[in-house]
Length: 108
Image (cartoon, rainbow, N blue to C red):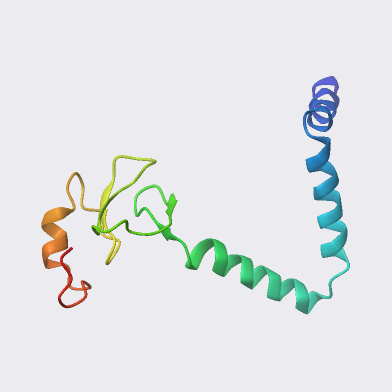
């Protein structure tokens, strides 16, 4: 009832630009052929799920290892290996030294 109408009105009042962009995007996607939609869905899956490196515990993405490959998630207390993605608990340094995926000659 009224709560649903209020939520809808509030959404529109809060961000009308986002509503306009969403409507335009939905219209654009509706005009695509089925094959185009499959290609876009595959591309989105690759961009969202395959390319980004993610914390093994909370799946928060991170861009790159800033030198040392003993990583610490900025979203949760996970410490992990940037070479293989293993959750190393509280300290990734011992694992990094012996990670089988570490590039030959790499320091860590």
